[in-house]
Length: 112
Image 1 (cartoon, rainbow, N blue to C red):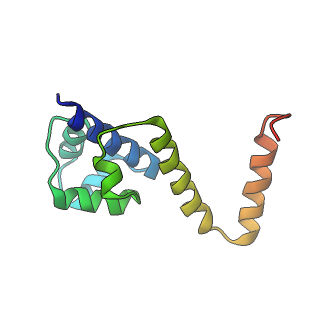
Image 2: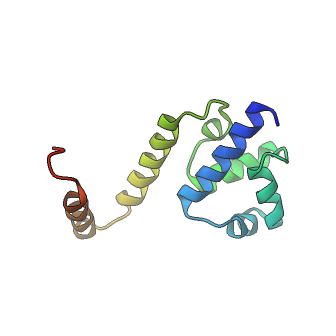
């Protein structure tokens, strides 16, 4: 498999997992069969541009991020942070305070 296709496949899978969706759920959302998603994530299928655009919307990432050949860990972490920030922004103030207190309690001592 060519490196660019492998990188796109890895990004598709990572984005789906970060969005908390199953392959079956994604398939229903874009109107394809589940094996189509599996084949795309395995790099055995070329993903049409229209489908990439749909997936980017569903996964809350850019098409550019999905199609960038370099799959650096920093990029993946940045995408996770962006997803976390989007989800946290949907919380009510009181719930956000609870999450922040929980995160503070989970932080290892001496990392301030």
